[in-house]
Image 1: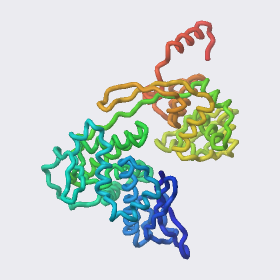
Image 2: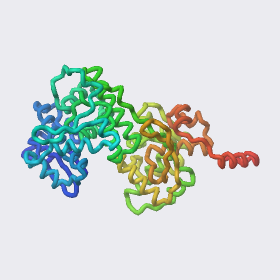
Image 3: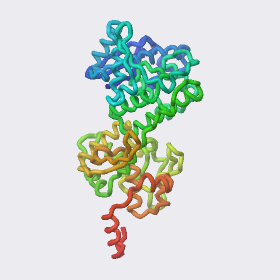
Image 4: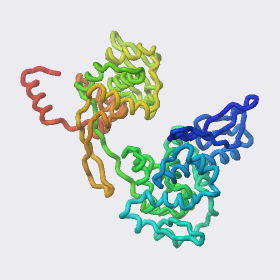
Amino acid sequence: MRLKIVSKKASGNNVRLLISYAHQTRHLFATGVCIPLQDYKAGHIDHPVAKTNPNADHYNKQVALLYYEILSIVSALRRDDKVPTADLVRHIHYNKEQIDMKRLSSRASIATLPPSHRDAGTSDEISEDGDTKTNYNETSNADSKSTHPRKHFSEIYEEFLAEKAFTAATLKLYTPMYTRLIECFPELDVEKFDGSAWMIFRRHLEREGLAANTVCIRMNKAKAMLKHLKEQMGYNIPIRSFPLPKEEVKKIFLNLGDLRKVVNCQPLTESLERTKDLLLFQCHTGLRISDLKRVNERHLQQRDENYFIQMNAFKTNVPLMIPLNTNAMAILQKYDFKLPEMTEQAYNREIKSLLRKAGVTTTVEWRAYDDKGNKVFKSGKICEVFTNHCCSRTAIRYFFSIGYTPDQVSRIVGKSLETIMGYYLETASQNEIVERTEQLATRILI
C-alpha cells in the first residue's frame, strides 16, 4: 500500500496536486489545488505548498483533509478485515454519503484491542440512528471540563508543530507517528485519549508489523507530543497512565567468518551488488547510514601509506578518524568516492536478501521485554534480523580483532567507552576464552 502526494503538470509553469493511492491498482484523487511549480515542496505530507504561496495555509489544509480522509478509509477497511484496494477506496471515497463510515471506523477502533482488554477499555453504544459508537474509558479525565473548543486533531497537531518549530530531521520522526495515530483513530479526541486508547495504539503498531524498537520510537514521540499538549497547551490528558515499551537490545554482529561469506558472495543483481558494497564498507568503518551519504574524496586523508576518513558524524558532530583497509578503499574508488544511495528501508530489506544468498544463517539471541516490562529472550536467524544499525557492532568487533585498543576504537567510531562496552559488545563465549588462552599460552597473538 502506497499513499503519497504527487504533482502533475498543468498549464504554464503550474502543477496540480493529487493524492496517489496504490494497492493492486493505482488511483489519483484530485485535491483541487493548482500552484506554481516553485511553490511545491515535494515529499512534505503536511506542508506540500511552500509559505511563498499567499494561499499556502488554506491549500495545505485542503490537501491534508483529503490525504487523511483516504488514510482513514484505508485504516477502517483494514480493521474490518477487508483488503483496501485502490478500487475499493475510490468507491468508498466517491460514495461516502451512501456508505456507513461511522460504523466502519468504530469497528476499526475496537478491532485493534485484544479480547481481554475490550470490556475494560472500551464500550459500545447504539445511537438513535442505529450506529455503533466506541467510547474510550474516561475514568481518568471524564470529570474535567475542557476549556478548548472542539478541533479536528489535524489542527491540534499543526498548532503543536508551530509551537515546537522542529528541524527537518526531528520532524521526520513525528510525521510517521502522526500518520499511524490517525490510521488507528481517524476521529481522535485528545481529551478522551486515556490508558486504554494508548494500549490500542500500541497494538495497532505491532499489528502493522513494525519492529519492536520502531514501536518504541513511535510511542516515545506520541507521548512527547501528548505531554506538550497537556503541559503547554492545556489539554486534559492523563499521560501518567501511558507506559512506554522498553527498547530491545540486539547485540548482533557479523563475525569474521560471516564477513568472509559476504565478501565471497556473487550478487546476481545490481541492487544486491550495491548493497554488498555498502554493507562491507559500513562493517569496515562503522559509519552510520547518514554519513555514508555524505562521505566523499575531501574526507580522505593520507598519512604515509595509509588512508583515513576524517569527518564529523552527522548525528552527534563528534570527530571521526577511521582507518581504511584495502576492501573499504577499493569500494570508494569503485564509485569514484561517492557511494550509492538507497532508502534505509530498501537497504535493510536488501541486506537480508544478501545475507540469505551468502549463507549467513547463524541463530542469534537477544534480550527483549513483554507487555509488563519483564525480561524475555528472543531468537532468530541473523539473516532475518540484521539491519544497517548492526554494522557498527560488526565494525567495533572488527577493529578489536585486528588489535586496536578500546580507547583507539572509541576514537575511530566516535562513541564513548561506556557506550561501546554497554551497548555494542556482547560477553565473550566460553569457547572464545578457551581459544584465546591457548593462543596466549603458545605466544600466538591475533
